[in-house]
Length: 110
Image (tube, rainbow, N blue to C red; front, side, top):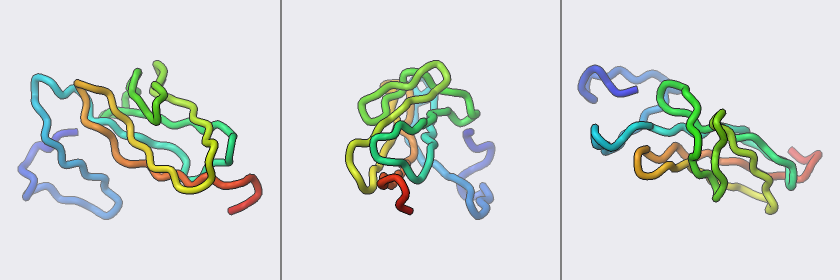
């Protein structure tokens, strides 16, 4: 949610998530947040969720070439092992999401 005080006056605590973005009042409607697991199993779908600053789901946001449904969810199946870095976008009315890092492993590995 937007600040009610200036950036220098806002108190930030450990584990707070902070977004600095240039946004136009008449264009920007959403500040996207991408969430999901830190680990995924190779060729097994995982559910990712895109919300805005209030926690409301965002439909039709693009994540890795796929789009979220009415619940703000997208189901992704990774075909390659290793680290995958993802962001959500919904142009032209939204600020791109945080980066979500998912480590794709073989089942049974940790």
